[in-house]
Image (tube, rainbow, N blue to C red; front, side, top):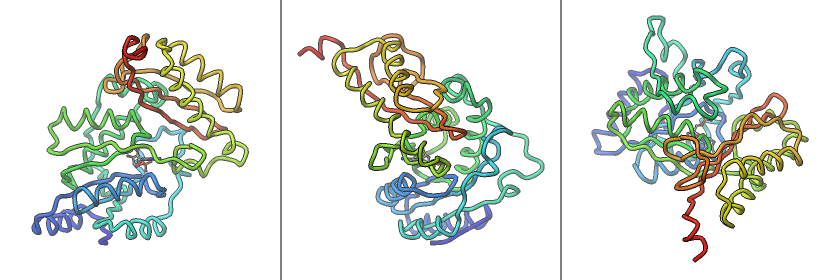
Length: 289
Ligand code: AMP
């Protein structure tokens, strides 16, 4: 595995793979790897032959009151884990490589950046889209691999790639979970033992909601009320939002139909956890048959 820090080194290493006729799969991350990250690397390696991973904690996607300063970091451990996944290139740029002093250009994916998490984190997806556009131009991959855990991020980046004609495919892979259902996240290390014990209720609530929908429930408000009640009853978490939206457009739904994304964000202390499920909803008649 080559560990590179500058754009020039990255381009040279990518070119060497291309000269051998290899395809490149790219996994952008903020590091502090867990099995979710590693699943994306394994998939990229399997499907493309070569895998480029970036680790960059992007300051432009954190608001001033958010956890940029204390975001967990362990480059040595990350590097060992990436090597085990047979990653070809690990790109670890510093802030001045990504954002030189002259930097002025931002990407704003309108509308779908404003709903769900975007309502509460203004500017977050602008930061994400900007840095990922830059990383894509640096790494020039054939395929970019993203996790379903960050459903809105995946939708924003898919839209950006399509709208700006990035010559690549975006693949969104399933959420990897702990045994008790908690979605893996670098931020889970912030949880106290008590919060950690309560956190699996989020996924449990989403699954209970899925069961209700499968039994015929079609009211978004009903499902949202049910999930909110369940989280309030079994945890001390503070709900930021629970929403039912169209999985592709992220547009709001009153009646559940098509591919429904149920997404939520809950604070456990100062730790913000997100989770979601996508549920294909058939028309009521098809359910009865
Ligand atoms: P991050 O380092 O949190 O920015 O995440 C890097 C990539 O890993 C993003 O595409 C995430 O959606 C993805 N990811 C994070 N957690 C998980 C998970 N539990 N399962 C699958 N993918 C994940």
